[in-house]
Length: 340
Image (cartoon, rainbow, N blue to C red; front, side, top):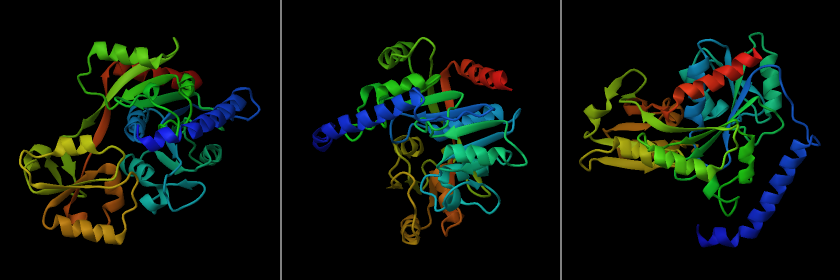
């Protein structure tokens, strides 16, 4: 923790008090939460920064979309539109935000919507001719105006909410006690071979209630990279000249997975959800020269229609469970079936 964050500790106490009062008012009903007559699953975290919400939402889409009509509802962070927007063939990352547009591109059989007011967004979705049967709320753990039926709380391995502090001293949006609202806690971005002993150590730190379930997941990288019309194996291009580019919260594992045995790659890092300007794109083009450019899926949807398109590839990722994946699936499916 740096010195400035320590100095700001009194503000963290004040911020924590405000969020605790807000949660208390929701808990006792003075501030109203709205429920809806269909399964709503909220995925979120206690902290700012990347905990793997997008791959977790995609996991749920794959799990449920073969059997049910699915809609995702996100805030649409940094989009250049306002209010409720339902994705269609005219949509792009500027209108929806990068992550919702990624959902729309990857899963054409679902509805993808954005609205900062989740209650309003749900009401609009339910007014459509084709109503969803399940709604997945992206990054909505603190959006208490809507009461979801099932809450999935994510916390990153190596950056557990139990070890963190409230903003601005730490990165927590609310007190650690907020974790009690979760039905399931998933420790994300774990080593794929995380030992049972370490799992038990983390479980002891998180101090979950007896009714809460705990799972451990890791980021599973694809063995191929993709462009609009080409596919190449990662191992085939690992030692080729290339430029690696990422505008995500914690890009180090992405770079590590793609690194070559020889030093023939250039790495460019941008802030999370970065809006690439025309100047940025031209600078990337100049640095890349003849090299292929490999980026994340989230960045790809923002760059694929630019002058970089001919040399631009993305590396897909998935969320996979260290163990207990079948149990997680059953918990989700049982919740949905109870409400159908």
